[in-house]
Image 1: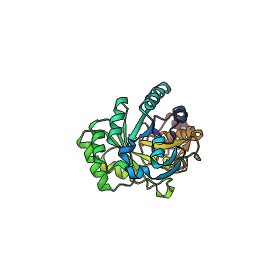
Image 2: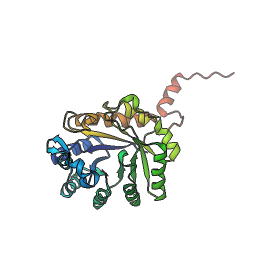
Image 3: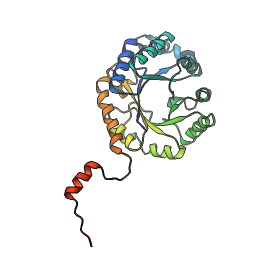
Image 4: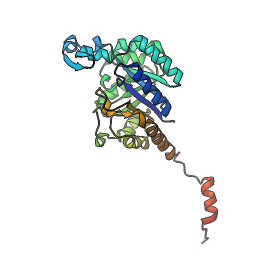
Length: 279
């Protein structure tokens, strides 16, 4: 199975379509399979009191202004859809509420994504599973019992799924990666398991994840880690994406099939160096 690479733009576009397009360009040029955004119906996800509370941001002085500043409109997503098609890369988005998931259906996306924070949102999970579309499910902040319930829900709906091992700290310390969960989750649920990372390092953790059998990788991407936004520091900068893709894809090819055989190149050396002495 070829390693599936998702470049998580998320909200790192800061509500700017030009930034979003630059990130799409970088991901496509580097060889990612997909880019991903986040979609929220702000008034449904957050309470009025929370949205009215103070928060300084480039868009104003309240939480509402900050949250709305990070949201793209229907026209924006139509533009993203057309732009990705022109660039030859697919896109999707993780919905944070049922209305957002229903909104995304108009684009006939190639896969769905459940963010770790949404594993307890049963109406949203049911809405996603009902589409029977390939779904990546991040497992950060969740107990095995909670993952059991979510996996059971998707299997009962006959919805194909791929879990993504995840530690939901931003940025994540490398020693907190606990990557042995990848084979554990694969054995427990008999499904593919990928890795969604929030570390600051470029490839070390992801390389280890591939060695342990990760079938997909998701990493946040940004133009500059110093930009405004809570996810920027745990992202890979656009200038480093080619190096990242080349490194992780090379690891999968190095692992090979696990079948022991003598290659043609090795046979040529064997003919010169092998010593066979009968008893």
